[in-house]
Length: 180
Image (cartoon, rainbow, N blue to C red; front, top):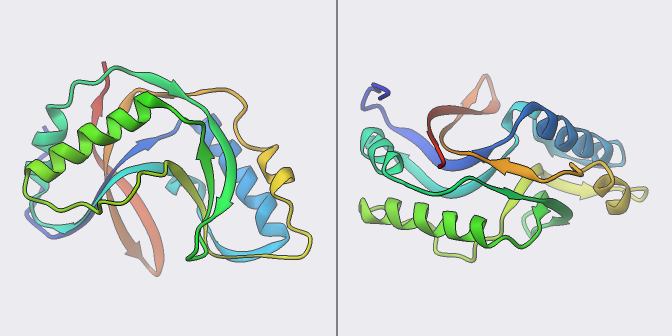
């Protein structure tokens, strides 16, 4: 068990990727960056958010709740790209019942602690850039060709800390729970 101070942290749960997957996602982001503007995600920050928790000092409680999750490992496929209204350029996933069910289980664990996670539709995605503005030569099709071709294996849930270090957004895994 991790021992953490009771300092306030900005937290979320996520699925993290192996180096091969992060390299492919980063390459897709770099391809989009050539013809566009935005704040592109560094390779080490690439992940799929399950539940955003927000600012809290209750890290140990969250770790305890996440440690209780019993869910089987599964595969899912990264597929397609899009742009949310607020200029978030993302890579998506193919529809996956296991991914939706894992999200629901994590959501309920966090809500069971008294947190009120955002209750919006779960749209599984990996943020490639923020404040994204596609240029004239931007091609979603060319970017999508660089997405990982093989299925991604979800084998653990990570509790992540989000912070700005010298003006740069950094995500740090502070706990992980292996899936069955």
